[in-house]
Length: 130
Image (cartoon, rainbow, N blue to C red; front, side, top):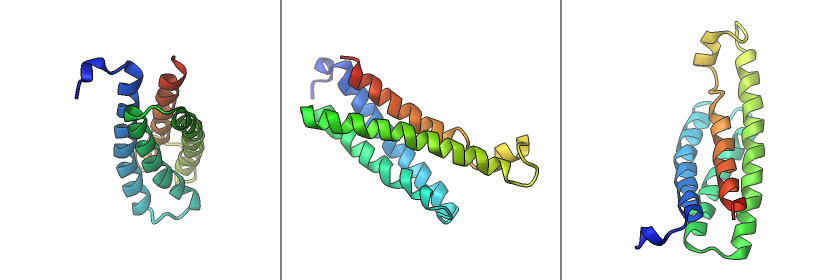
């Protein structure tokens, strides 16, 4: 494969796809550990592999329809990450001791949903930067 001829957006699509796959593993393990006690915990676990496959597919086949689907999924990813941030931040606050440093360290990872949104924004940057 001739990587030198790849445009930057194709490389970013591939990176976003691989990153969402790795993030999916972490999210699935973390939410499984919590027994999916809230139904919304399923959202990133289901969405991340779909985002990953779409981004990798887009790196190799850049059809117009696939580009539109990808953009819609990335906007959804921004919203999923923002909602996850709210739930995680709220989850830290309801622990005994409230918003203490101990609860930020032991409670739900507040930054992880922001990473979900950030990867989606990176995908959107590659889409809109044409």
